Length: 289
Image (cartoon, rainbow, N blue to C red; front, side, top):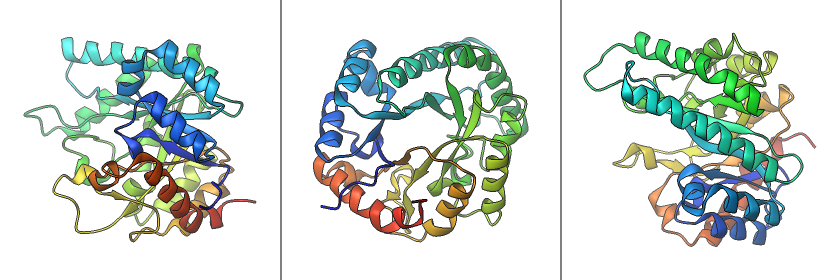
């Protein structure tokens, strides 16, 4: 097996069927240096126990996944979502503090799609901006960066009304970059003919909180959410996107986040081994030495 690149992080979505303990064990046994966990598994294990296990593992913490889902009109559902995001911010701070040196307190935000019965994209995006403004003081106090993640436009109706980096950057603009940044995810942004210029903008503004990589291949799965592939197995130009991110000065961990049923059905240790090899071939050659 290829030795893992020192900046590779395994996002727990890649090995979704694992508990926190199992994910940490598989990553450390493979020699990976960093991990990003998902809230559901952390809550199952308990936040304090998850933090203890993370500290014992010696792994860096790269991101906490995920917050967001706050496009609803004002009312009980929106208040519940805002309160849940405050809890997610607190979780992020605890886990990042437990991680090895180099950990980052980054909460990835998938903002949500159109509310049921709505066609008002502009209004939904404004409610995202309003939610970020409401949460930013809590994030600043906790030392957490809210990382807005634009998703591919096919998810605009049900998962994210943010489809481009510019849309995310415009919402982030009023806030300190340490408080509100963006997620650059190859799967979601590779299609954009202006993506390089938008990555450059994100770099100039100091907004890149995390870089996530996986590949795009057609035909998509029946559930298009589960259509992510190992880097190098599809059509994404990882050289161009990775060089663009590197040129901004981003020097953090790079997460491989794979939502794919076939990968989830693979033994977690094997999925991590394949991830290491794919990253080494498709991404690592374009990282700064």
